[in-house]
Structure formats: C-alpha cells, structure tokens
Length: 290
Image 1 (tube, helix red, strand yellow):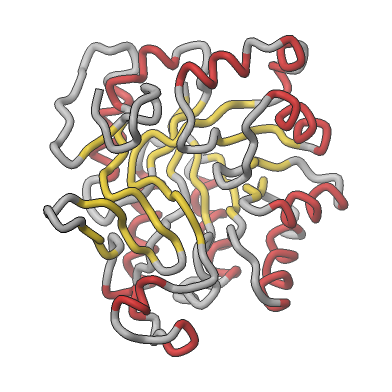
Image 2 (image 1 turned 90 degrees about the vertical axis):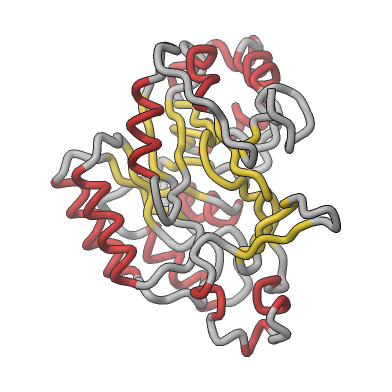
C-alpha cells in the first residue's frame, strides 16, 4: 500500500506552499499531487511554480501528478488546462470530464479524481478504455461498495490495468458551486472577493444552531465539517486499495502520514478525535464514527 498527498485544497501564501512541498520531499510519502483544483483566482503559485516543485519532488523520488481544476467557467481556465495536458513530463489527475476529453484527444494516461462521478463497474471500464490508469473512489462511497464493484466480472479481467486510490484523511470535498461561499460569508461578491479565503488556511467552519460543525466553506467548494479519518480501517483495505490519500492540512500532515504508515497492518491504531468521522467508509451516515 502506498500513500499520497492530495493537492492543497486551501489558499495558502506562496512561502507556505513552498515550505510544505520541501517537507513533502523530505517525507516518506510516495505520491504528491500538485495544482489548484478549487478556484482559478488563487494565483499565489502559477503553472511554472508548480512545474518547478514537481521537478524538485521527482528528484526526491516522489511520483508527481498535476491536478486539474474541478469546475471550469472561463476560456482562460481552459488555456491553463492545456498547459497541464501538454506538460510532457507528469501524469495528470483529471477532476472534470472536460479534462478527461482533452487528455484522451492527446492519447495520454490520466488519474480520475474523486469528483469524477464513477459509481459503477461499467463507467470504470469505460474510463480505463479512455486511458485511465488510476481512479480515486468518490468520497461518499463505502468499503462494501468498493469491494462489490471490484469483484464484478466486467472489471476482473482489467483489474491489473488500473490502481485504486481512496481519500483517507482530511475534510471531504463534497460539492462545488458557481458561487463563492467564503466571499458571501464576508458580504462580498464573488467578482470582488479580494481573495479573502487566504485568511482561512483551513476553510471557514459552518455550524448548526447547536454548535455542530456541519460544513467547511472553502471558496466555491463545500467540505465536510468533520475530518475524515480512515487510519484504523487500513488493515481491511489490504488487497483492495492501492493508495490512501491524505489531504494536506495547515499543521500535522506529516505526523499523520507517519501514523498511517505505522498502522498499515493494524499494529498502531489511533484514537479518533471527537471531530473525526469515518461513516461513509463504514456505510453509515457520513458524520458518524464507527
């Protein structure tokens, strides 16, 4: 089993991003995803900056993937996507079907991100025929669902053609919108947001009337209010999941990476915090902890 760092989902200053990836280069992580996937207005790092980081990480023996946006709204964003597709060096994670189409036109292999709604064996087989070499299971699905899908006859004969990755740690990306909820929470319009999400390095929490964290607002992205944590489910993933993804957090990401790697076989279980959840994986309500 390998471990990956997903793309940074929040808006961090350039210096913080660069330090994070220097730490990633020194860590034991196997795969690193790079790129802005939430909002094209977040331009602390540009394409050339990501390419420089990718080359640095590759020199540190990390496999690097460039992650595409999840929601494309303007021609300029498509021009940026073409840079990713034409990078000539690194695998691309497609988080939008338009990106898949562009990659297929260039006969390039790709990773299908969790935002791609691949819910059954027929869709998965079709994506493999289009060039998929790895897919990230949609975050709201369960271990039982994944096991059932991978055991289907339509998949069994191509099982060696792709890897399966599961989002295992971090606030779950649940939905995207044409509106910016972080800007709205500050009574700003999306077009005049002044990039206020940089003030919330782990998003802005939205709570219910009783104080329960229901969602995290992250620009146009809505995340789970609880932190998803599958560290104690790793033994059950053996033989089914190839890669477990950790979503970068402002603090503690690499400490958690060490804990995850220590518990691959269940020998170092960790107590979950009151704000953690694992319900989706266990086929329970998403906010539940089993």
